[in-house]
View (tube, rainbow, N blue to C red):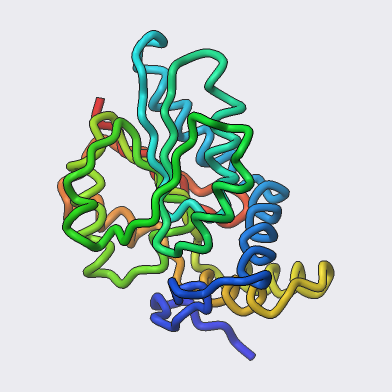
Length: 236
């Protein structure tokens, strides 16, 4: 059956339920982190952070917030990559209390990573300020109007810049992920949410249009393997 990727899907994902908890949630979060690592997805965010950090003096303390942090894997990798060479504070934010608890448990050896359960669409979050905001595989969970508002907010909140790492909506990516699910016998939640996520992903022209609409002119937008877009918004 043909996969139609002309328009973004608005289908819900199982993980969109912020009250979800239990072993299935933890197993799914860990499997998503493992897949991202194996396919090079986390490297895309690390490279984006490095691109912004190169213009910031090493002695200057930097606060980095990861929106939709999942099991905290991205923050732990950033700590391993950068904490020995500069002072960084790492903050993970997720709307699911069980997800935040799981991330904290996995990050016990990383005392400078803090996790908070927050809904980023609430007014209280808008008041917070960071140097760099990360949005890895999170933006596609929202509808177009919400995305525009979130990007305006992130741009206002981030003193140095924003790094967005999200999915390229592609029939090839959809079929390849089906193959990955079959080969690795992934659980139902990973399979279903992963395929919906791809259909909720983006085309390059859509992200370019967003940049123009929001008057973001200092940015880099690149396609990366495996079917990702790396969007670095630089405010320095």
